Length: 450
Image: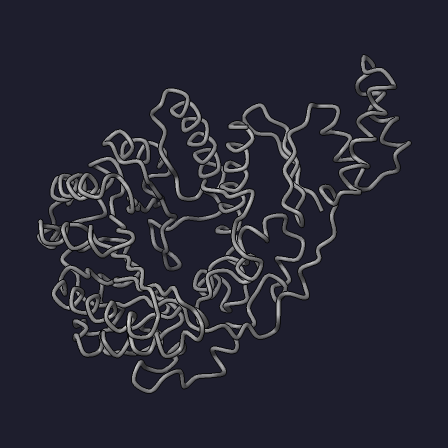
């Protein structure tokens, strides 16, 4: 299976199973598209009719190149990975998302976590529960040496002292058990101070900073508790933190909604503030939310992704480049085959922990009793649910079978699939289409760079 498309003046051919990418002239591009389903003689005749100026020897050279690439399994290569997608993906635990706070000091209009409370009564994680979570992670990590802990919320800085104690405990426990911890903090930035900056610079592998872009866009959605906008409050603090980190180990994460379908302007605004590591995510919204994205918005969203890719190429040439998370593509190594087939590992290798110590497949399932797995004290008790997650991969989703992007997408987000289709093995159609456009843009940028 191949995927062919034209973007920014390039004719691009992606061989789905091998991941090989080819940039072709018009005649070769048309020949490759035809060759998959037609004989070499028919292809030669079509190309000769369409490109009469091309000599027969040139057409023969194109056909010869196609045959060589097919022989080398760089075109029309077979999918040899189905056997690697085991029905059960029994992998030891590698990461926890610690919801150390189910409280927030902001009132963002689109918050999927119900303003930090996840539909509950709020609360902060105790140090003792945090330590139990660390012990649970170590105890269920098998032979893994590198473990990840994400501090999330709500707003984790509302429970900052506990975060610091949990990190210190994990460092000590990890050293005793031969484990190395990497920590990430996600914050709205309101409570960033010198202590937060100093500690995160020493201990946090990554810091995720929430900002939606232009002041009027950010402040329309990301409001403080008193109703005021957060832009002027957090941007100076983000700049100070990023400078202290030497411009590394962070990214600015924004959210776009139906209210700012011209989100490229927001990304470029953040870049113009001096930030280089950027992400802009489609909003997670329930049915009927006025800010939610619909299929009717898809043409504009795809257009924006193309505009962004073109602008990034221009800025790269001027020495003013920046990184967009969804356009980071490793064409040489990339994820291991199991990650390509089954994604993030939610519900199996990755779990979320509530302030009370309850376990869920990921932070987007927190508060939904149907997805309660157990607790850090009692372990995983809902083996049936975990088995369902372990069997969820691109081969368990009929819609993924003929999709050219399946080895990049890994079947998509289980939470989005559940919310859209009622099953973690379903698909979120709009999310699929947005993802495919991002991959097309990312590949085009690689071609342009080469």
